[in-house]
Length: 73
Image 1 (spheres, rainbow, N blue to C red):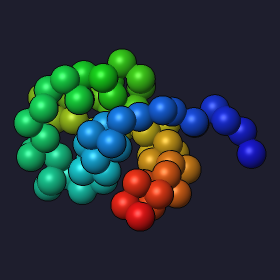
Image 2: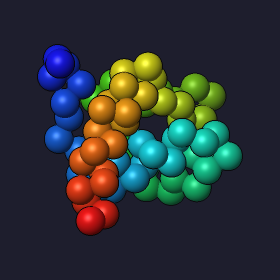
Image 3: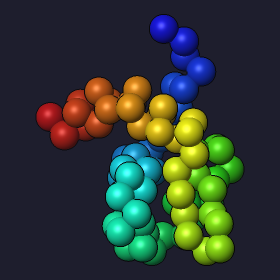
């Protein structure tokens, strides 16, 4: 498996990325610095003021889901 999508995101960044899975919940992201950091990593784009996950962001979220489970445990 390739490590191309292995990002060391903070728990807040993971939470913001997860929130973007559902377009309705993405409006609740009030921490601009989180979005800004995800945009810099190429995981999120902002179109007309609306954040959206990039294909790379989706892959990171799927591959990082095991890490998310570790954080919860």
